[in-house]
Amino acid sequence: MSIPLLCVRITLTSSDIHARAELSERILDEATLRRLSTMEKKDAKRLAKVIKAEGKSEHKAVTGSIKELERMVKLQKEAAHAERKSQLRLTKWTSKEHKARLRFLKEKERYEKIEGELRNAENDYEERRDHAGGLTAQVAEKTQELDDLRGQKAADDVSFSLLVGGCHADETAREGGQVVGPQEPRPQLDQVPPDVI
Figure 1 (cartoon, helix red, strand yellow):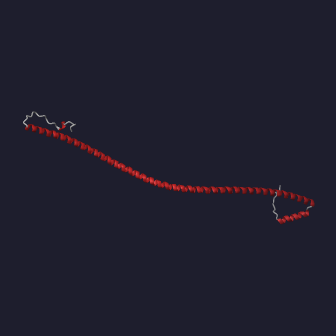
Figure 2: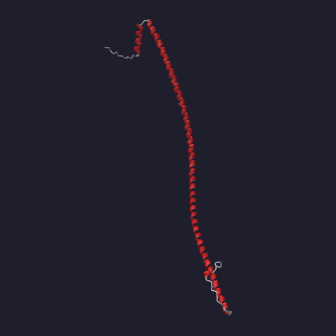
Figure 3: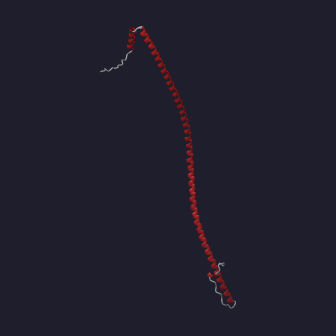
């Protein structure tokens, strides 16, 4: 049966370490102390190398971090400058757009007013054209009626002259003692030639 070994780590204080060192120096011989001293020197050199390497590594890390920070600060400055530039450009074009929109709205209002006047003019023209067309049709109708009346009057005048002329010739012949032969029948209105009318 094996007995388990317990590994207990004992933490020593500085005073404990000094006390042990003094005790070791009193107990050990010169050769052992020299060998231990040489080992301590070698350990110290190795430790110094490790510390120096760590220092270099930490220095490289710190230098790299500083360079990275400098690069990021430079990028941040460039980004802030680009942002300011972009903001100025945005402000400029916002102002221009605002002025252009005001001009556009003014011109749009002017256009809408002109468009309204054009519609009014078109409607007025349509109404006046329709009115004039109606009057022209009425004038044509009245002119036709007048022409018909004038034609009727001319026909009546011709008929009347023929009637009056025929009656006057009969009376003159009777008064002169002439024998009047068979008379031609007087023309009726519908027998009057059209060129006379």
